[in-house]
Image (cartoon, rainbow, N blue to C red; front, side):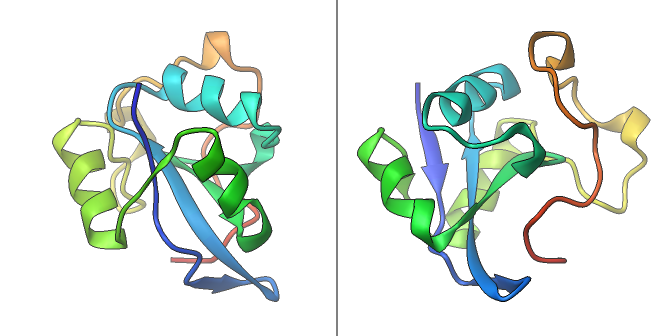
Length: 112
């Protein structure tokens, strides 16, 4: 299991944010996020938005620190990228049946 997190450099809602992703599955991502107490509403399309104050929690739990470009490269290579410009019916499955939570849409993090 490998989860990746980029630095909290993304401004939004008066805070700085990181992105947490998996290069294996959304199920793995949801399980990890739940395990460190990240609320389901923090999930946005293909990643979790984590505020700066939760960054160290994710790293201590095993998330690997990478730059934003590397995070995006790994997410795309895994086939899990869900860009805003593509319709949701073309996105990879998210395992929603195993993870009760909101569907795609704006999350608490920054607008990108």
